[in-house]
Length: 236
Image (cartoon, rainbow, N blue to C red; front, side):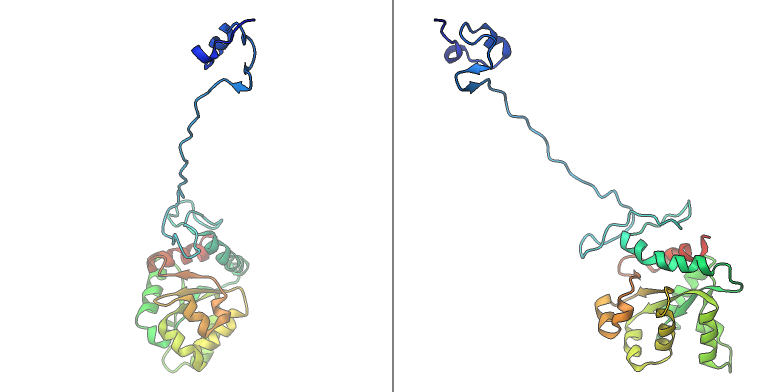
């Protein structure tokens, strides 16, 4: 009876197994299979490949998306959440684009912000060829204040509300800004711009407004906010 050579020479290769007088041509010796060294696969690392900002924590996605209305040369990237929030607004822009003599944007803001951040945002938008209804520029001396605002709302494609600590203080008083918001909230026509505060703080004052996703300056510079708004209302 032929003796197996595995104890002395091993069966680590097919040729060694074939040369064994007892096991040649079989799949192994007794209950044992030929030894093969373990394979090693290096771990794979994923990269977001995103451009722009975006929080890596807090439930926000990276900014790596471009919406359908972005211009070919646009350098702005969006999170999927921003695209979802702005798409209904874009639909309103497209529906109202054929109406004559409409401003692109109605800017709702707290009275205290009129000479500060509201003017800054207005100037950034105007620099991008966006026509803005802004109370500081559009209410003439002696003109009825509320009637002028009513006309401005009617003659604008969409509205933006600048949510600041000053606005959060004024909303409970049900002033002019509150009336503007009531009109804008009734339609898919409103983009909140949250500046120097949070959605959590806004939710304490106005849960309805806080339910509308918008843009936050904690996530991007005000110049990028203006750039995205300009794309939203002018690329037709």
